[in-house]
Length: 477
Ligand code: 5AD
Ligand code: SF4
Image 1 (cartoon, rainbow, N blue to C red):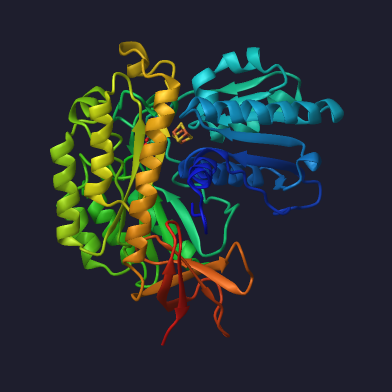
Image 2: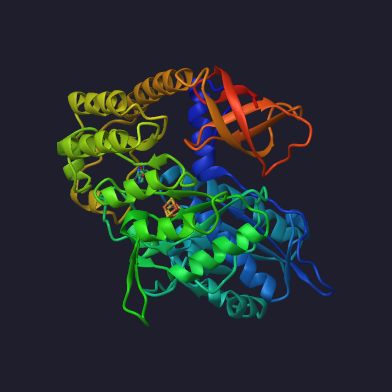
């Protein structure tokens, strides 16, 4: 998610790649005699990466081993994202490469998983002739059966969206793991209906996972040596699970507290928060527990009330600003990040300036920034004209990125001289003489190694230098 020394374009490229283009590869794992091999690439949000770990677990139970070498694979899977057109184009390009491989090695199966599978359904099989499997986000349990169908020469498709599926009982096979931090999916789907967003259509209705299965997963990760968990959902603040035996209701603040209590040295993060749903109870729970990281991803999308209304975000500029004030009031050391869309339907120059001034007001530590991309079937596509010319969208986006980069730099420079507890994640990208790790505020800090320290350890680091994306420092004490 971070770039050690970004140029403006570089920063956005990094963000884009992080959000929608990053593939992960694994050494062969779980191989047993007679194993078939699967290869999986994931695109899109953290939720998708988390889903791929569920898929991997289901496949491992069914005699498949993971390989990082797609040429070796009997089954190639691509877990897809539909959020912007660009994300879908990336997937199409990858499919061309898989097609070529399939031509060379007949019998290899290619499967499309996730949001694009759900959005395009059978159309996928018409458009991409060499795809054998199309499986939506709620149908992964059906994979073994569908693979058998495809092995018999038929197409395997299941895009059924469920109201109950949470994969609560499946222990994810950690694929892209640094052994230090892991994602835990706490809910699925989304009921928000933001007008620009395809997610409610591709991931279905919102449902929350059994709280005890979440705590069991966090405990299991701790026992395996992990030091940080990120609770994942499209809108974590609306997490709500009722214990069928006791009738007791667990809300997100309760779940956060339960996770924080797993162990004081297990850090807890969460994403994504919706400004309309994040409560004081959540904020005070964050404040109460040192191991709940002081970082909130609170997407604003636009800084203008009229545009927010068109986006169906159900809050206005004032409401959002009050949330930001409240967060800094309760936790002055909390970092806030955002998602911002430039050039939504009918957005004027003045309204765009409201997004810029919001960045200045909220003083985000960082943001994911996009220009609006119309998605078929969404409320906005049906109701509003995508009338801002691409050139204007791109220029507005550049203005947003430029300002956010300047604010990120300022915020990072404010940290020079401060000492933070850092959880070591591994070697820095640039040098194996340096470690990288994050502080509670989710800022990446790079610092020279010291004897006896290893990934997964905590250490105190004093910040000596800062770019807009990274802090640099030295171990102290
Ligand atoms: N166009 C551009 N950006 C979008 N996002 C969601 N849908 C669209 C779209 N149609 C952005 C939002 C969201 C993030 C995950 O992606 O900012 O919070
Ligand atoms: Fe992409 Fe949204 Fe689906 Fe995640 S939920 S993969 S961001 S479309």
